[in-house]
Amino acid sequence: MIYVSTRGQAPELSFEEAMLTGLARDGGLYVPAEIPTLSEDEIRALHGLSYEETAFRIMWPFLGGTFTEDEFRGCISRAYEGFGHAARAPLVQLEPGHFLLELFHGPTLAFKDFAMQLIGQLFQTALAKNGRRITIVGATSGDTGSAAIEAFRGLDNVDVFILYPHGRVSEVQRRQMTTPADSNVHALAVDGDFDTCQARVKDMFNDFEFRDEVGLAGVNSINWARVLAQVVYYFTSAVSLGAPERCVSFTVPTGNFGDIFAGYIARKMGLPIDTLVVATNQNDILHRCLSTGEYKPDGVTPSISPSMDIQVSSNFERVLFDALGRDGGAVGQLMDELKAGGFTVPQGALQALQEAFTSGRCSEEETLATITEMRDLTGELLCPHSAVAVKVAREMRDPAIPMVSLATAHPAKFPDAVEQASHIRPGLPERMADLFDREERFTRIADDLGAIEALIRERRAH
Ligand SMILES: *Cc1c(COP(=O)(O)O)cnc(C)c1O
Image (tube, rainbow, N blue to C red; front, side):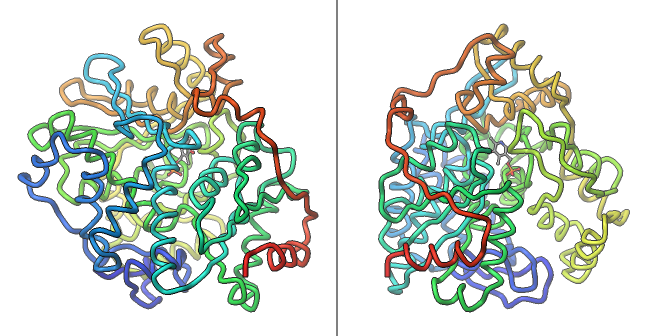
């Protein structure tokens, strides 16, 4: 199994190299050269299996010998043992023919745990085998940083440094980053906003001397291993609704396009998915692009579903690559145009995108109204991101085909919006009810590259 860059100019890599590298050297994203498929019999054989066993069967063909079967099974088992639900990704019925896939039972209560917990184990296993140490550095506006810290805390061959904007993340998000006591976890509260944090991380990756000295690595959402981990729950949910005999559709609250891209891969692997619906909030650049072919960023408007507040959707490049007939040069050209302000998807490629995806948008008022309505109809409290999906799903769905809406975060992660809509203040699950009593540990630091690098040199284990 080899991996190629969406811009066609970087070397082909193995699974392990693509996972540890992240971004390709030509600025592109790694994708498998070809997608392995499962036969109908192989899909049928998934009925009744555990989440972990399904995960093994779906992901194994993509690994190309990086790990032994036992090593990989061990990684999967450790990745999901800390989840608060035996099914890992349980399916709940909302109304006839409409289901909610609860992806918020992981340690930080958001779907990012599915991928992050697994790559923590995969990194650790790969590094232990070749005796390397790495330093993971990431910037976060909240969710990704806590998921990364939970995934890498306590691992032997990794130090993790997360930069977050001081005073600008929610209390739950901050406490999830500052309360782990493990010595390899370092939460840095930067004087600045999220863009400042992200810019300093970029600067560190561009400082090649520093990068090599500390073995810098990234775990942002373009990492192929993260996408792969998310393919699994499309299979487990579709199979429990009757696949391969029955088709299923999915609606996905979308930002960086990683989660819905995993659904697209599941369909290419042979899972009978009828429709993949991209649901956006008021930051609807993806909805507009899929409708008209115009991709023109025009500034982010902060919303109550902040993890979807994006303008440049990094994983969208991966579907563009397919839609453009896997022509890396054509992808590179569109990405150059994006730097200059925006691009127009060529007609043939737009048609291919519209065959693969449909899309819808949900305003702030509609998000709140959906939380209220679903509380009344079902008793289920939705987080604002999940409400965006449910609203768009109800608008678009075909009653003859089961629709699964993805619930990407626990309502207690966004208590203010949920309370405003439902008059119920959602509580944290019992296993983390003491979050507000745990001791916090973080380092406040100026927005100064030299100071940040010096701190990382000093704090990481040698
Ligand atoms: C990251 C995130 C999303 C968006 O997922 P993408 O893969 O970036 O499209 C949606 N909801 C929540 C709660 C998230 O944390």
